[in-house]
Amino acid sequence: MPLLEINHLTKYFGGVHAVRDVSMTVEPLSITAIIGPNGAGKTTVLNLISGLYKPTVGEIIYDGQNITGFPAHDLANLKIARTFQLAKSFPEMNVVDAVSVAQIYMNRVNLFDSIFKPKKVEMWKEERKENSLKALKLVGLEQRANEKCKNLPHGEQMALEMAIAVATEAKLLLLDEPASGLNTVEIVNLMETLKNLKNQGVTILIVEHHMDLVMKICEKITVLNDGEKIAEGTPYEIQNDPIVIEAYLGRDSASA
Amino acid sequence: MKKNWVFLIGIALLAILPLAISSQYIMHLLILIAINVIYASSLNLISGYVGELSLGHAAFAGLAAYTTALISLNGGSAWLGLIAGILVTLAVSYFFGKIVLRLRGAYFVITSSAFQMALFYLASNWLSVTRGPMGLLNIPKVAIGGFVFESKTSFYFLSVIIAIIVVVACRRLVKSPIGETWVAVRENENLAAAVGINRAKYTRIAFVFAGVFAGIGGWLIAHYIGVVSPDNMSYNLIVSMMLMVVIGGRGTIAGPVIGAVLITLLPEYLRWMGNWRMSVYGLILFLMVIFLPGGIMQLWSTIKNKGVFSSWVRSKKEVN
Image (tube, rainbow over the protein chains, first blue to last red):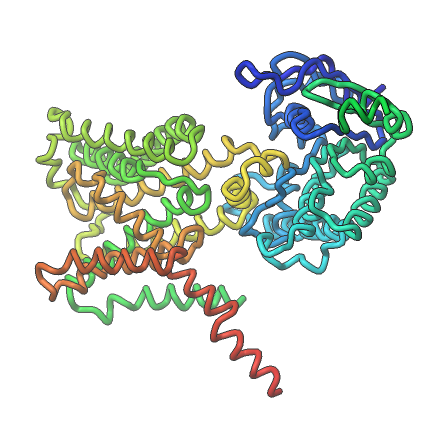
C-alpha cells in the first residue's frame, strides 16, 4: 500500500488551473520526485498535500486516511512535515531554538504547567534542545546552533529548514526545491542527508529542478507540465521519454 | 541564579522605596507607573510576541473598570468587582479574539480599533448605566477585613504587588512553549503551521491573558482614582500603552516595564517647559522611534552583544 496517494487532484485559482487531474502515489521508504518546467504546478501540488491550499477537486490519502482539506497545522500530528522554497525559517530566533519549535506540537507542557511549573518547562526545553542538536548534526549545522537564523547564508538556511522538518520526527517529508541556490558541495551533502533520512525510515517527496540530484537519488519521478501529469517512471524511463524531452526543450529537439 | 538575585534586590528596593519618599505626588506617579507596567506588559503579549497591533486593548481596561465600578457602587465589594472584571474580560477577549485573530496586519488594526470605539461610545451614551461622560463617581476603596487601601503608600504596595505578579506571569508564559509558538507564528506563519502549531489556538491564549491583565489594570485605576469615565478606555490611553511597548522594546519582558516608567515620567519631567511640553514630548518620541526602532532594549542588546561592553571583556581576556 502506498504511503501517500493522490487522486485526480485539481486546483483552480479563479478561472485559471494550476493543477489539473493529477494522480500519483508515493511508496513507503522511497524517494519520489515531482519535476517539470517553471509554472508546471509542482509547488501547488506540495501546498495542496501540506494543507496550505484546499483542492478544488480530488482527494489525498495518507496512510489509509483521507486527509483532503486538513489544515496545515494538523499534519505534524500525522507525521508529515515540509520545507519551503524560500527558506527563511524563524529569522529572529536562535538556530537551535528554531529547530526545537518543531517539537512543540507534541504537547508535553500545557497552559497550567507553563505558568506554575517552570521546572517542567525547563526540563522539556532541554530535551527538545538535545533532539534539535541531533537534527542539526544530521544536516551539518551543529556549529551554528547559537547563531540567529537570519544570519545564516542561503545554503545553511536551506539546511536549517531541513533540520526543522526532520525535528518533527515526520515519516513523510515534503521538500520544496531543497537544492535551489546550493553549490556543488552543498548538493552532494544534501544527497547524503536525504539518503541517510531514507535509511532511517523516512519517506521523501521532493519537488526539484536539479536534474542531477533527482536522477541520482529518486526511485520514481512524476513529470508535470502546465498543471498536468505528462509522464511517470524511473529516472531512466523519464530521461528517455520523448514527451518529457519535448516539454523541457521544445518540439524540434524531441523529433531530432 | 544571577537573574534571581537581580529580581530579589529589585523587589527589596521597591519595598523600601516608600520610606525614602515623602512626596504624595511622587507616590502618585509610582502608582501610575505600576498600573502602566500592567497595561504595557499585557499589550506586549499581543503586539510584541504575537506581532499584531491591537488598538482595542484599552477597551479591556475600561470594561473591567466599569464592571467593578457598577458592582462596588451597588453594594458589592471591590474583590467581587475584581473577580467579575476578570470574568468579563476573559469572556470578551476569548470571543473577540476568536474573530479578530483570523485577521492580520491592517485588518487586525482596523477591527480592534472598531472594537474599542464601539465600547467607548457605548460607555459615552448609555447614560442610564454609565452616566456617559459624567462618569461613575465615588467608587469605594479596596479593603481587606478592616484595612482600607486609602493612603497612597498602601495603594502603592497593592499595585506594585499586582504589577509584579503580572510581569512574572507574562515572563513565564513567554518562556514557555506557548510563548515560543507566539514568536514562531510572528516570525513565519506558514512554517509554524508546517510544524504543527495551530495559530488560532495559541494566539488566543495570548489575547485572553492580555485582555484579563489589562482588566486587572483597569480595576486598579478605578479604585485608585475613584472615578470611571469613557476616558478609561479612550484612544489616548491606547496610544500611550503602545508608546510604552514600542519605546521600551517590543517582544521583550523588560522593555514595556522600562517604557511604562519613561512614558509616565517624561511628560511630568518636562513640566517646566510650560506650553512647549507636549510638543517636545512628541519630538523626543519621534526621534526615539526613528533612531531606536527596537526601543531601549535594542540599545541594551547592542551594548551587550557587539558594542562597548563585549569588546571590553574581550580585551580583558586577552590581557589575562
